[in-house]
Amino acid sequence: MTSSGSSIRDRYFPALAQRNFRIFWTGQLVSVVGTWMQNIGQDWLVLEITGSAAKLSIVAAIQFLPMMLFSLFAGPFIDRFPKRRTLIFTQSALAILALALALITATHVVRYWMILVLAFLLGMVTLIDNPTRQAYVIELAGRESLMNAVSLNSAAFNTARIFGPGVAGLLIELLGIAPCFFLNSFSFLAVIGALLFIDTPPLASARVVEGVRDVLASTRDGLSYIRKKSEIAVPLVLMAVVSTIVINFSIFVPTFAKITLGKTAAGYGFLMTSMGIGSLIGALAQAVRSKAGPSASRLFGAAIAMCVAILLCGLQRSYLLSCVLLGFAGFFMITFATSTNAIIQLSSDDDHRGRVMSVYSLVFGGVTPIGSLYAGGLSEAVGPALCMTISGAAGLVFSAALLIRRRRLDRNA
Image 1 (cartoon, rainbow, N blue to C red):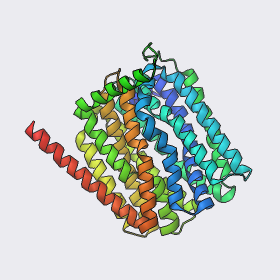
Image 2: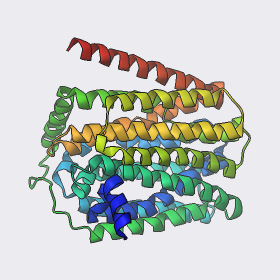
Image 3: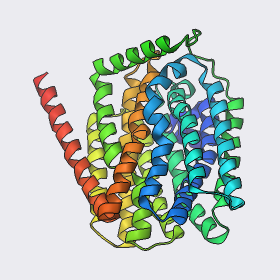
Image 4: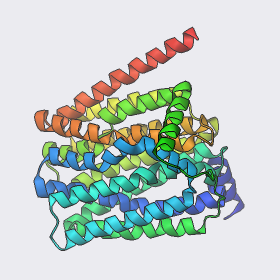
Protein backbone atom coordinates (compact mmCIF):
# COMPACT_ATOMS: atom_id res chain seq x y z
CA MET A 1 0.00 0.00 0.00
CA THR A 2 1.34 3.50 -0.85
CA SER A 3 2.08 6.03 1.88
CA SER A 4 -0.92 8.06 0.67
CA GLY A 5 -3.13 4.97 0.93
CA SER A 6 -1.78 4.20 4.39
CA SER A 7 -2.43 7.77 5.49
CA ILE A 8 -6.06 7.60 4.35
CA ARG A 9 -6.51 4.23 6.06
CA ASP A 10 -4.96 5.39 9.33
CA ARG A 11 -6.99 8.60 9.34
CA TYR A 12 -10.43 7.28 8.38
CA PHE A 13 -10.24 3.48 8.89
CA PRO A 14 -7.75 2.85 11.73
CA ALA A 15 -9.30 -0.53 12.55
CA LEU A 16 -7.97 -1.85 9.21
CA ALA A 17 -4.43 -1.10 10.41
CA GLN A 18 -4.89 -3.97 12.89
CA ARG A 19 -3.83 -7.22 11.19
CA ASN A 20 -6.32 -9.47 12.97
CA PHE A 21 -9.29 -7.25 12.29
CA ARG A 22 -8.25 -6.76 8.64
CA ILE A 23 -8.10 -10.53 8.03
CA PHE A 24 -11.42 -11.17 9.76
CA TRP A 25 -13.13 -8.25 8.02
CA THR A 26 -12.02 -9.48 4.59
CA GLY A 27 -13.42 -12.95 5.26
CA GLN A 28 -16.67 -11.45 6.51
CA LEU A 29 -16.99 -9.31 3.38
CA VAL A 30 -17.00 -12.45 1.23
CA SER A 31 -19.29 -14.45 3.50
CA VAL A 32 -22.05 -11.91 3.96
CA VAL A 33 -22.59 -11.68 0.19
CA GLY A 34 -23.61 -15.33 0.38
CA THR A 35 -25.74 -14.66 3.44
CA TRP A 36 -27.73 -11.99 1.61
CA MET A 37 -28.18 -14.29 -1.36
CA GLN A 38 -29.59 -16.96 0.92
CA ASN A 39 -31.92 -14.46 2.64
CA ILE A 40 -33.38 -13.37 -0.70
CA GLY A 41 -33.61 -16.93 -1.99
CA GLN A 42 -35.29 -18.25 1.15
CA ASP A 43 -37.87 -15.44 1.23
CA TRP A 44 -38.74 -15.97 -2.43
CA LEU A 45 -38.83 -19.76 -2.02
CA VAL A 46 -41.38 -19.45 0.78
CA LEU A 47 -43.51 -17.03 -1.24
CA GLU A 48 -43.39 -19.38 -4.25
CA ILE A 49 -44.39 -22.42 -2.17
CA THR A 50 -47.08 -20.74 -0.05
CA GLY A 51 -47.96 -17.35 -1.59
CA SER A 52 -48.58 -16.12 1.96
CA ALA A 53 -47.08 -13.16 3.83
CA ALA A 54 -48.22 -14.75 7.11
CA LYS A 55 -46.33 -17.99 6.37
CA LEU A 56 -43.25 -15.99 5.38
CA SER A 57 -43.47 -14.23 8.74
CA ILE A 58 -43.64 -17.61 10.51
CA VAL A 59 -40.33 -18.65 8.92
CA ALA A 60 -38.70 -15.45 10.17
CA ALA A 61 -40.28 -15.99 13.59
CA ILE A 62 -39.03 -19.59 13.83
CA GLN A 63 -35.53 -18.55 12.73
CA PHE A 64 -35.24 -15.95 15.47
CA LEU A 65 -37.17 -17.86 18.14
CA PRO A 66 -34.02 -19.37 19.74
CA MET A 67 -32.52 -15.91 20.03
CA MET A 68 -35.68 -14.59 21.66
CA LEU A 69 -35.87 -17.47 24.16
CA PHE A 70 -32.23 -18.17 24.96
CA SER A 71 -30.12 -15.05 24.21
CA LEU A 72 -29.86 -14.07 27.84
CA PHE A 73 -28.46 -17.50 28.74
CA ALA A 74 -25.93 -17.50 25.89
CA GLY A 75 -24.02 -14.58 27.40
CA PRO A 76 -22.33 -16.52 30.24
CA PHE A 77 -20.94 -19.06 27.75
CA ILE A 78 -19.69 -16.32 25.42
CA ASP A 79 -17.87 -14.62 28.28
CA ARG A 80 -16.15 -17.87 29.37
CA PHE A 81 -14.99 -19.57 26.17
CA PRO A 82 -12.40 -18.44 23.58
CA LYS A 83 -14.35 -16.55 20.93
CA ARG A 84 -12.16 -17.59 18.00
CA ARG A 85 -12.75 -21.30 18.65
CA THR A 86 -16.46 -20.72 19.14
CA LEU A 87 -16.73 -18.87 15.82
CA ILE A 88 -14.93 -21.61 13.87
CA PHE A 89 -17.54 -24.06 15.17
CA THR A 90 -20.56 -21.82 14.46
CA GLN A 91 -19.42 -20.78 10.99
CA SER A 92 -18.87 -24.44 10.05
CA ALA A 93 -22.37 -25.30 11.26
CA LEU A 94 -23.89 -22.45 9.25
CA ALA A 95 -22.13 -23.72 6.11
CA ILE A 96 -23.60 -27.20 6.62
CA LEU A 97 -27.14 -25.84 7.08
CA ALA A 98 -26.88 -23.74 3.91
CA LEU A 99 -25.70 -26.80 1.99
CA ALA A 100 -28.65 -28.83 3.28
CA LEU A 101 -31.12 -26.18 2.10
CA ALA A 102 -29.37 -26.07 -1.29
CA LEU A 103 -29.62 -29.84 -1.75
CA ILE A 104 -33.30 -30.17 -0.90
CA THR A 105 -34.13 -27.20 -3.14
CA ALA A 106 -32.04 -28.45 -6.08
CA THR A 107 -33.59 -31.93 -5.88
CA HIS A 108 -37.13 -30.46 -5.69
CA VAL A 109 -38.01 -32.26 -2.45
CA VAL A 110 -38.25 -29.04 -0.44
CA ARG A 111 -41.43 -28.56 1.58
CA TYR A 112 -42.54 -25.69 3.80
CA TRP A 113 -41.97 -27.71 6.99
CA MET A 114 -38.38 -28.46 5.94
CA ILE A 115 -37.68 -24.75 5.62
CA LEU A 116 -39.11 -24.25 9.12
CA VAL A 117 -36.83 -26.96 10.57
CA LEU A 118 -33.71 -25.54 8.91
CA ALA A 119 -34.70 -22.01 9.95
CA PHE A 120 -34.94 -23.14 13.58
CA LEU A 121 -31.52 -24.87 13.42
CA LEU A 122 -30.05 -21.75 11.81
CA GLY A 123 -31.47 -19.74 14.69
CA MET A 124 -29.88 -22.05 17.26
CA VAL A 125 -26.43 -21.56 15.73
CA THR A 126 -26.91 -17.82 15.25
CA LEU A 127 -27.85 -17.57 18.93
CA ILE A 128 -24.17 -18.11 19.75
CA ASP A 129 -22.56 -16.81 16.57
CA ASN A 130 -23.98 -13.26 16.49
CA PRO A 131 -23.12 -12.01 19.99
CA THR A 132 -19.76 -13.81 19.87
CA ARG A 133 -18.82 -11.96 16.67
CA GLN A 134 -20.02 -8.66 18.14
CA ALA A 135 -18.03 -9.12 21.36
CA TYR A 136 -14.95 -10.36 19.45
CA VAL A 137 -14.52 -7.08 17.55
CA ILE A 138 -12.89 -5.27 20.46
CA GLU A 139 -10.32 -8.07 20.77
CA LEU A 140 -9.51 -7.77 17.06
CA ALA A 141 -9.41 -3.97 16.72
CA GLY A 142 -8.79 -2.62 20.21
CA ARG A 143 -10.88 -0.25 22.31
CA GLU A 144 -9.73 2.94 20.58
CA SER A 145 -10.76 1.66 17.14
CA LEU A 146 -13.99 -0.05 18.26
CA MET A 147 -16.39 2.53 16.78
CA ASN A 148 -14.46 2.42 13.51
CA ALA A 149 -14.46 -1.40 13.50
CA VAL A 150 -18.20 -1.62 14.17
CA SER A 151 -18.84 0.83 11.34
CA LEU A 152 -16.58 -1.10 8.97
CA ASN A 153 -18.37 -4.35 9.84
CA SER A 154 -21.62 -2.61 8.93
CA ALA A 155 -19.99 -1.37 5.72
CA ALA A 156 -19.01 -4.94 4.79
CA PHE A 157 -22.49 -6.21 5.63
CA ASN A 158 -24.12 -3.54 3.49
CA THR A 159 -21.67 -3.79 0.62
CA ALA A 160 -22.89 -7.37 0.47
CA ARG A 161 -26.47 -6.11 0.67
CA ILE A 162 -25.85 -4.13 -2.52
CA PHE A 163 -24.54 -7.08 -4.52
CA GLY A 164 -26.15 -10.07 -2.83
CA PRO A 165 -29.86 -9.30 -3.39
CA GLY A 166 -29.38 -8.08 -6.95
CA VAL A 167 -27.28 -11.12 -7.93
CA ALA A 168 -29.71 -13.42 -6.12
CA GLY A 169 -32.69 -11.94 -7.95
CA LEU A 170 -31.00 -12.42 -11.34
CA LEU A 171 -29.86 -15.96 -10.42
CA ILE A 172 -33.40 -16.89 -9.42
CA GLU A 173 -34.70 -15.56 -12.74
CA LEU A 174 -32.04 -17.42 -14.78
CA LEU A 175 -31.12 -20.60 -12.87
CA GLY A 176 -33.56 -20.99 -10.00
CA ILE A 177 -33.23 -20.59 -6.23
CA ALA A 178 -30.82 -23.41 -5.28
CA PRO A 179 -27.61 -21.69 -6.56
CA CYS A 180 -28.14 -18.93 -3.97
CA PHE A 181 -27.91 -21.52 -1.19
CA PHE A 182 -24.91 -23.36 -2.69
CA LEU A 183 -22.94 -20.13 -3.03
CA ASN A 184 -23.75 -19.15 0.55
CA SER A 185 -22.49 -22.50 1.85
CA PHE A 186 -19.17 -22.08 0.05
CA SER A 187 -18.82 -18.46 1.21
CA PHE A 188 -18.38 -19.51 4.84
CA LEU A 189 -14.98 -20.96 3.92
CA ALA A 190 -13.68 -17.37 3.70
CA VAL A 191 -14.52 -16.65 7.36
CA ILE A 192 -13.29 -20.03 8.61
CA GLY A 193 -10.01 -19.51 6.74
CA ALA A 194 -9.65 -16.01 8.19
CA LEU A 195 -10.23 -17.28 11.74
CA LEU A 196 -7.48 -19.88 11.29
CA PHE A 197 -4.98 -17.08 10.50
CA ILE A 198 -5.97 -14.86 13.46
CA ASP A 199 -3.71 -15.04 16.52
CA THR A 200 -5.55 -13.13 19.26
CA PRO A 201 -4.86 -14.42 22.79
CA PRO A 202 -8.03 -15.75 24.47
CA LEU A 203 -9.53 -13.27 26.93
CA ALA A 204 -12.25 -15.61 28.19
CA SER A 205 -12.36 -16.69 31.81
CA ALA A 206 -10.63 -19.96 32.60
CA ARG A 207 -13.56 -21.04 34.78
CA VAL A 208 -16.09 -23.13 32.89
CA VAL A 209 -19.86 -22.93 33.28
CA GLU A 210 -20.61 -25.37 36.08
CA GLY A 211 -24.35 -25.88 35.78
CA VAL A 212 -27.79 -24.34 35.50
CA ARG A 213 -27.47 -22.37 38.73
CA ASP A 214 -24.17 -20.94 37.57
CA VAL A 215 -25.69 -19.86 34.24
CA LEU A 216 -28.72 -18.29 35.93
CA ALA A 217 -26.55 -16.45 38.46
CA SER A 218 -24.29 -15.13 35.72
CA THR A 219 -27.31 -14.06 33.65
CA ARG A 220 -28.85 -12.21 36.61
CA ASP A 221 -25.54 -10.47 37.22
CA GLY A 222 -25.44 -9.32 33.59
CA LEU A 223 -29.00 -7.97 33.70
CA SER A 224 -28.32 -6.19 36.98
CA TYR A 225 -25.21 -4.63 35.46
CA ILE A 226 -27.23 -3.33 32.47
CA ARG A 227 -30.05 -2.00 34.65
CA LYS A 228 -27.63 0.06 36.74
CA LYS A 229 -26.02 1.69 33.69
CA SER A 230 -28.53 3.94 31.92
CA GLU A 231 -26.05 4.57 29.09
CA ILE A 232 -26.52 0.89 28.21
CA ALA A 233 -30.15 0.39 29.24
CA VAL A 234 -31.74 3.31 27.34
CA PRO A 235 -30.29 2.45 23.90
CA LEU A 236 -31.30 -1.18 24.43
CA VAL A 237 -34.91 -0.23 25.25
CA LEU A 238 -35.09 1.99 22.15
CA MET A 239 -33.61 -0.78 20.00
CA ALA A 240 -36.09 -3.34 21.39
CA VAL A 241 -39.16 -1.29 20.46
CA VAL A 242 -37.93 -0.07 17.06
CA SER A 243 -36.75 -3.57 16.09
CA THR A 244 -40.11 -5.08 16.99
CA ILE A 245 -42.25 -2.52 15.16
CA VAL A 246 -40.15 -1.05 12.37
CA ILE A 247 -37.15 -3.22 11.44
CA ASN A 248 -39.22 -5.94 9.78
CA PHE A 249 -37.73 -5.53 6.32
CA SER A 250 -37.75 -9.28 5.61
CA ILE A 251 -41.57 -9.01 5.72
CA PHE A 252 -42.15 -5.45 4.53
CA VAL A 253 -40.00 -5.46 1.39
CA PRO A 254 -40.87 -8.78 -0.33
CA THR A 255 -44.60 -8.39 0.32
CA PHE A 256 -44.57 -4.72 -0.70
CA ALA A 257 -42.63 -5.63 -3.87
CA LYS A 258 -44.79 -8.60 -4.86
CA ILE A 259 -48.27 -7.59 -3.68
CA THR A 260 -48.31 -3.77 -3.73
CA LEU A 261 -45.88 -3.00 -6.57
CA GLY A 262 -46.42 -6.22 -8.55
CA LYS A 263 -42.69 -6.89 -9.06
CA THR A 264 -40.78 -10.13 -9.72
CA ALA A 265 -37.83 -11.55 -7.76
CA ALA A 266 -35.46 -9.22 -9.63
CA GLY A 267 -37.57 -6.22 -8.64
CA TYR A 268 -37.53 -7.34 -5.01
CA GLY A 269 -33.77 -7.90 -5.17
CA PHE A 270 -33.10 -4.38 -6.39
CA LEU A 271 -35.32 -2.86 -3.69
CA MET A 272 -33.09 -4.61 -1.17
CA THR A 273 -30.04 -3.44 -3.09
CA SER A 274 -31.30 0.14 -2.71
CA MET A 275 -31.45 -0.40 1.03
CA GLY A 276 -27.94 -1.79 0.85
CA ILE A 277 -26.60 1.29 -0.93
CA GLY A 278 -28.12 3.56 1.70
CA SER A 279 -26.81 1.35 4.49
CA LEU A 280 -23.30 1.26 3.02
CA ILE A 281 -23.19 5.05 2.76
CA GLY A 282 -24.40 5.27 6.36
CA ALA A 283 -21.78 2.78 7.58
CA LEU A 284 -18.94 4.57 5.77
CA ALA A 285 -20.12 7.92 7.10
CA GLN A 286 -20.06 6.47 10.62
CA ALA A 287 -16.57 5.04 10.06
CA VAL A 288 -15.13 8.32 8.73
CA ARG A 289 -16.37 10.30 11.75
CA SER A 290 -15.78 7.53 14.27
CA LYS A 291 -13.06 9.47 16.12
CA ALA A 292 -15.79 11.71 17.51
CA GLY A 293 -17.38 8.62 19.07
CA PRO A 294 -21.06 7.68 19.22
CA SER A 295 -23.62 10.18 20.52
CA ALA A 296 -27.15 10.05 21.93
CA SER A 297 -28.34 12.73 19.49
CA ARG A 298 -27.21 10.66 16.52
CA LEU A 299 -28.82 7.57 18.04
CA PHE A 300 -32.27 9.15 18.49
CA GLY A 301 -32.10 11.21 15.29
CA ALA A 302 -31.37 8.12 13.20
CA ALA A 303 -34.21 6.13 14.81
CA ILE A 304 -36.71 8.93 14.11
CA ALA A 305 -35.53 9.45 10.52
CA MET A 306 -35.73 5.71 9.75
CA CYS A 307 -39.33 5.59 10.99
CA VAL A 308 -40.26 8.58 8.81
CA ALA A 309 -38.73 6.90 5.72
CA ILE A 310 -40.76 3.70 6.26
CA LEU A 311 -43.94 5.71 6.92
CA LEU A 312 -43.52 7.65 3.65
CA CYS A 313 -42.68 4.51 1.68
CA GLY A 314 -46.02 2.98 2.62
CA LEU A 315 -47.89 6.09 1.42
CA GLN A 316 -46.74 5.94 -2.23
CA ARG A 317 -46.71 3.43 -5.13
CA SER A 318 -43.74 4.49 -7.27
CA TYR A 319 -41.05 1.84 -7.69
CA LEU A 320 -38.31 4.45 -8.15
CA LEU A 321 -39.41 6.45 -5.11
CA SER A 322 -39.64 3.21 -3.11
CA CYS A 323 -35.98 2.53 -3.94
CA VAL A 324 -35.02 6.04 -2.78
CA LEU A 325 -37.00 5.86 0.47
CA LEU A 326 -35.68 2.38 1.29
CA GLY A 327 -32.19 3.74 0.64
CA PHE A 328 -32.81 6.43 3.27
CA ALA A 329 -34.25 3.81 5.62
CA GLY A 330 -31.08 1.74 5.19
CA PHE A 331 -28.86 4.76 5.85
CA PHE A 332 -30.57 5.66 9.10
CA MET A 333 -31.02 2.05 10.25
CA ILE A 334 -27.26 1.47 10.08
CA THR A 335 -26.53 4.78 11.80
CA PHE A 336 -28.95 3.77 14.55
CA ALA A 337 -27.66 0.19 14.92
CA THR A 338 -23.98 1.18 14.79
CA SER A 339 -24.48 3.93 17.37
CA THR A 340 -26.30 1.54 19.69
CA ASN A 341 -23.64 -1.14 19.31
CA ALA A 342 -20.72 1.21 19.93
CA ILE A 343 -22.35 3.01 22.87
CA ILE A 344 -23.13 -0.16 24.80
CA GLN A 345 -19.77 -1.84 24.07
CA LEU A 346 -17.76 1.21 25.10
CA SER A 347 -19.90 1.52 28.23
CA SER A 348 -19.32 -2.13 29.20
CA ASP A 349 -16.36 -3.69 30.95
CA ASP A 350 -14.58 -6.79 29.59
CA ASP A 351 -16.15 -9.17 32.12
CA HIS A 352 -19.73 -8.32 31.10
CA ARG A 353 -19.35 -7.56 27.40
CA GLY A 354 -20.51 -10.99 26.20
CA ARG A 355 -23.65 -10.75 28.33
CA VAL A 356 -24.31 -7.17 27.24
CA MET A 357 -23.98 -8.16 23.59
CA SER A 358 -26.25 -11.16 24.09
CA VAL A 359 -28.94 -8.73 25.28
CA TYR A 360 -28.18 -6.55 22.25
CA SER A 361 -28.71 -9.61 20.05
CA LEU A 362 -31.99 -10.23 21.86
CA VAL A 363 -33.36 -6.73 21.30
CA PHE A 364 -32.00 -6.43 17.74
CA GLY A 365 -32.73 -9.89 16.35
CA GLY A 366 -34.37 -11.84 19.15
CA VAL A 367 -37.57 -9.82 18.97
CA THR A 368 -37.94 -10.79 15.31
CA PRO A 369 -40.47 -13.58 16.00
CA ILE A 370 -42.80 -11.04 17.63
CA GLY A 371 -42.09 -8.40 15.00
CA SER A 372 -42.46 -10.83 12.09
CA LEU A 373 -45.78 -12.20 13.31
CA TYR A 374 -46.98 -8.64 13.90
CA ALA A 375 -45.87 -7.46 10.44
CA GLY A 376 -47.09 -10.58 8.64
CA GLY A 377 -50.46 -10.59 10.35
CA LEU A 378 -51.02 -6.86 9.83
CA SER A 379 -49.92 -7.11 6.17
CA GLU A 380 -52.46 -9.89 5.61
CA ALA A 381 -55.18 -7.82 7.28
CA VAL A 382 -54.62 -4.34 5.82
CA GLY A 383 -52.03 -4.84 3.07
CA PRO A 384 -48.23 -4.34 3.07
CA ALA A 385 -48.34 -0.60 2.31
CA LEU A 386 -50.65 0.35 5.18
CA CYS A 387 -48.71 -1.96 7.48
CA MET A 388 -45.52 -0.02 6.70
CA THR A 389 -47.27 3.31 7.30
CA ILE A 390 -48.68 2.21 10.66
CA SER A 391 -45.34 0.74 11.76
CA GLY A 392 -43.36 3.82 10.81
CA ALA A 393 -45.82 6.09 12.64
CA ALA A 394 -45.76 3.93 15.80
CA GLY A 395 -41.95 3.83 15.85
CA LEU A 396 -41.78 7.58 15.33
CA VAL A 397 -44.10 8.29 18.27
CA PHE A 398 -42.18 6.00 20.64
CA SER A 399 -38.73 7.28 19.62
CA ALA A 400 -39.78 10.89 20.03
CA ALA A 401 -41.45 10.18 23.40
CA LEU A 402 -38.33 8.39 24.75
CA LEU A 403 -36.12 11.25 23.54
CA ILE A 404 -38.31 13.84 25.30
CA ARG A 405 -38.28 11.76 28.49
CA ARG A 406 -34.51 11.36 28.42
CA ARG A 407 -33.99 15.10 27.97
CA ARG A 408 -36.26 15.84 30.91
CA LEU A 409 -34.34 13.39 33.09
CA ASP A 410 -31.01 14.91 31.99
CA ARG A 411 -32.34 18.38 32.78
CA ASN A 412 -33.44 17.32 36.25
CA ALA A 413 -30.26 15.38 37.02
